[in-house]
Image (cartoon, rainbow, N blue to C red; front, side, top):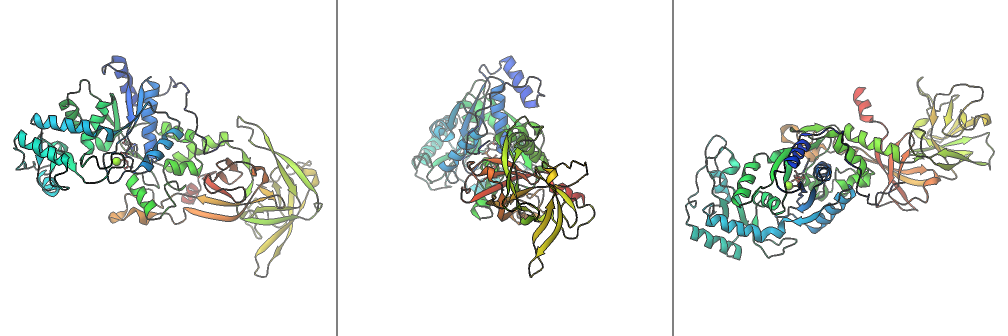
Length: 573
Ligand code: ATP
Ligand code: MG
């Protein structure tokens, strides 16, 4: 049995030599062969610790760690923590846990915030070489002066400042002499450059804010572009893989590492970011869902975060298989949720034991079954086509719980479950024929009666008569009470980021993303399993006992994924 809280061992399977190579892997293989970097392949995964990682990050993790592993290279985990107002140690810890849980081990752990001094020294060097200047315009004026795609920018009136004055101002910026926004350091490149990012980009800004690691040691903080490429260069990275929205930043990346004097600097290559239907993949948006209470936390099982998926019951193997299956492309494309769910089912099907649980119980009394008799049926843990074996004892008795939906008083012809006069198979048990029912004063069915055929133990009739339907059940006297949390897609529309008329994505939340069944019943074979155990509840779906809330005395199961894509059916109707 698998447990969510057990970190999986790093995958040491050798790379499949016959695997189809994507364009990134082809490029890396070529560079490894030519030795053009003069050092082994070195990648990095560079999250900003301003939130929990999501499935989009998992794609980047699989790519960066995967490529390093396949090419005998190295991969760093680097926290790109240059923004004092949004980052937190709690996120650093969560990111470490998630990367490990996904099955990867980093060669070096680095923090961009350890490079503040080095970056500052480069800033002074750039100033000394006339390649950077202190601009004292407001941030708004700077933005306006940048021009547009069709109109060249306007040089700042401070652009011509003498080196000595720039150096003096920069040192006083660092010394804390100025308030936020009084000055910024800009690269001096080209205010008419066709690439807007090259029009004297900002390198350092003043922020009098405590950093979660550096405290108040600094009050000038590097901007993303200034810190990112140079951090790569400091670490000897060869391939800096990032998502397509950074395409225009590449020119600035190259400019900075060149001006800083790096020989054979790292090279940035972009790939398509993962966008998944019915969810949002942006830490900023996910943070809003958490802070506004739309979900129970970063690890809410409806969240596309690694922590949420883990608590939902998804395995790291399934996430890696999904990343493999979607591959790497050069242009953005949304991925259907069904693609992810297939990967999850494929993986769980092979791993997890079968169990019977009833979500909305209805009492079934087998009136001709001896009142005190209990049989123990030997039920397989895995179906025959799964490479695992084992069995579990399942008690059978006169009173059972069946699924309320598996009985109809007045069914249509194609209803192959239980109905007056109809015969059905109780999984692993007997064939039973419905003989009647009991209703309460309000007319609600509270009990169904049936007669069993003692000759059909195991589910087959010796006379060969055909019985179409098989239903699941649990023995009423032996069942354990439990709560089922039926999770569904978080959003009601495929692309919550693209609502008409700029609608807020929060408005598209699916109100039925969690349905709780508080009076559910499960067979007793699960009683001793630790929280985080995974199962297939027969005919219902894959479930995990909630790693956080489930107790022996109060079992809670999260639905990881239904057995089939019920939405596809809804659409097809
Ligand atoms: P978010 O908007 O969720 O904060 P981000 O890109 O700002 O995403 P970072 O922490 O900066 O988050 O990302 C770390 C790495 O993960 C980057 O290299 C980034 O390109 C990659 N990444 C982030 N989101 C995705 C995604 N949806 N698909 C693939 N890679 C992603
Ligand atoms: Mg970011």
